[in-house]
Amino acid sequence: MPEFTLEEVIERVARGESLERADLRELDLAKANLDNANLRRADLEGANLEEATLRRANLASVSLRDAFLVRANLEGANLRGADLESANLEGANLRGADLSRANLEGANLEGADLTGARLPSAQLIDAKLGVATLENAVFTNADLRNAYLGGANLTAVDFQNAILESANFEEALLTGANLRDAVLRRAALPGADLSGAKLERAVLEGADLSQVSLLEADCRHATFHGARLKGAKFSRTHLYGSDFSIEVADGAEVDEVDFSVAGDGSQLIPASALAAFLNGKTDGGTASPQAAAVAVAPIPTNRRYFGHGDVLRDASLEFDADSIVEVDGRFLKCNITLGQGAQLIIGREGLLDGCQVHGSGILVIHGRFTSEAAPGIDGARRIIVGATGCLRATVKQPAGHTHFAFEPGCVLRLKTETA
Amino acid sequence: MAEKLTIVEEGSELTGTLKSTCGVTVSGKVSGELHAPALVVATTGAVHGTVKVEKLHSQGELSGRIDADTIELSGRINDQTTITARSLEVKSSSGEQPTALFGNCVIEVGVDPNEPALPTAPPAKEGKGKKGQPTPEPTGE
Figure (cartoon, rainbow over the protein chains, first blue to last red):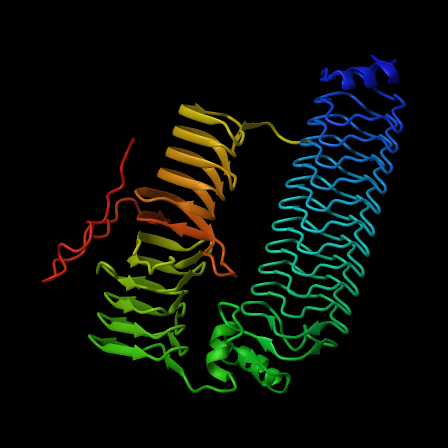
């Protein structure tokens, strides 16, 4: 038996009294006005809340397991840590609701409006979100394994670090979505629109990407192995560091694609040169796209390569804006000036010892950079240290700061100084 | 269901020592010492002082002496901060803003603690010796 009747609940809410920890199991609260109610930790398991209004209600840690919330209005409600397992929220209004760490396993959210809702670390395994509106919603670190999101509006949704294994996104709108580090293994995305989506380091192994649009999507370091790409559209897609290859691209419609380190479109490879580019990538036993870019980029006007065994000592070197310099040899006590946007890539075998680097360039370190000069690096716009990289130096940042990126596994003994 | 967490909510400030056997999430402000197996600093969060955790994921503001096994960083790292870790990850930024803003900091990741430190100040060069502040040393509490 529930602790209160429908009338008592409505009366208490109208008087602004708390229903915290109240036992309201199986209670029929259909169409009830519970706006701003404090139902924190209440037990509403199996309750009927069809078309009830719970705007800005405090439902933190509430139990709504198997509750019926069809077309309920939960706009701005606090549902942090709520248990909504197998709840029916079809057509519900959850705009701006906070569902952080909520359990929505097996819940039905079809046609629900979750615009701007927050669901970080929420559990949505087997949840149904077909044709739901999820624009700007936050699902960081959420678990959506086997969830159905077909036809959903996922524009600018934040799925960073989310687990989306075997989820279904058929015909979903994912333009501008953040899928960085998301796991989409065996996910189904046929016909989905991923234009402008951020897929850096996303795992797309075995995913069905047929007919997807990846126009200007950022797929740097993404893995496509075993993915189905028939009819997938790659146009100005950023692919640096990904495992994109001729075999992987089989059946895809590829226009020009970008292999620049920074994903800024500075290494666009036209479709006509792609096969040569990708074949070049595997020549010489290197799987490094930036190495391939150096080796077979179509307009190699500003590239330099210093191979294994090359040694430069006490040299002064200046590299033009936008040039690409790859070092697999050794530079000792050299003074290096990088023009705007010039890339200095230290390969795995490369070593820069006792050098000083100046200028607004980009450093990519897979090998070693060691300098006791202060600063050893002055004014670099971007410094990326890969998993095999080692950086021991003082870095003086330009106004606006250096963009640092460090991969796990790198070794750093670093001092950063501001301008 | 969700694991147990100690949460310092937005709008809350804690000064002193916080020791926890469960994970800590900071959306507010902590000043002092913090010891926990895991620490998450949200975008609205700030932790100033001495931090010793196994796992740190920060999107907020950090300063002081940060010691962790693995760190994932974004947000702001203020001046006078020392970060020591076995593994550090800062993701590549795609926009105009850096993923993480580093002030005058010392970062030691995966290095032998017995290895000699980097020089603490710029080498004396004529005409430049008095221009800037010497590189700040990491400070204890």
